[in-house]
Length: 333
Ligand SMILES: C[S@@+](CC[C@H](N)C(=O)[O-])C[C@H]1O[C@@H](n2cnc3c(N)ncnc32)[C@H](O)[C@@H]1O
Image (cartoon, rainbow, N blue to C red; front, side, top):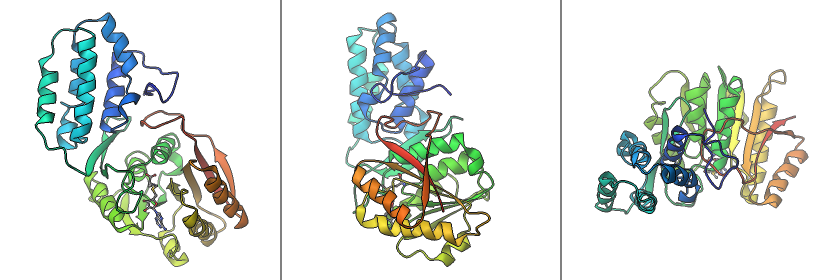
């Protein structure tokens, strides 16, 4: 798959042709990426040299008029803002009239905007979508777990490049949130068993719904479950019962108050398995506050846990801010 970086997130961008541009718009639209990160400059360039409305019409078909948008639509407000921007581009280019653009905006304007929830869809390289019901606000109901964070997309992408670390294994995910990484791993890496986990009641409920929405609850391979696994209270017995060969966690290092129990749990995970076959443990973080992240690393060291910093994903599949500080570490004792 070609790289589909958005304008202000990663340069250079290899949006070589109309197919790349169309795909770039589709990927960003369904993930509800920020509008400035869409490949607008590539669109500008194309429509400057070709006054037909074909490309804008195709963008419309691949976004607001796509069947996925009927089934799992981004918010009404988001679609309104997106269409308004697309109309501005179309009008500025003085291209052929395109009634369907205004019809699409008319439909959106006639729809009630008020909702706290939205569908975000993340497109896999095979073209399938992972659709998740998420909250619009990044923090709601006292938790950060009701949205998908960049670190989850980063690790999902890395998993696509490193499928052997998940294939035919039992995978345990800590603090799964909305479930993006796990669903991507289940769809593409062939684990034998996948254990999603979290501890917040609303997150657990939504996680179960998202697992079901993506057809994982009803299939036998991989076998999938969602567990209430609080880092502060999870027991060695629980962990032994799960028997994970691979353990992952994304964006779990953000609150100094919970780092202690997270590190203790990671120590239990590494120590309660058989020394001959310890699990591979990977933690991916967005480093927002270096003090918090360093505190996590110091506490790991104090518990006798070593880590290697790994190279991130090579593939560019999902839209996220590649400029922000993301780091993945592999833990061992
Ligand atoms: C920033 S969110 C990350 C969610 C997801 N991993 C992602 O990257 O999109 C942190 C997650 O950790 C979970 N969490 C926080 N404290 C926890 C604890 N003590 N036990 C289990 N999960 C916890 C939250 O409920 C939330 O889902």
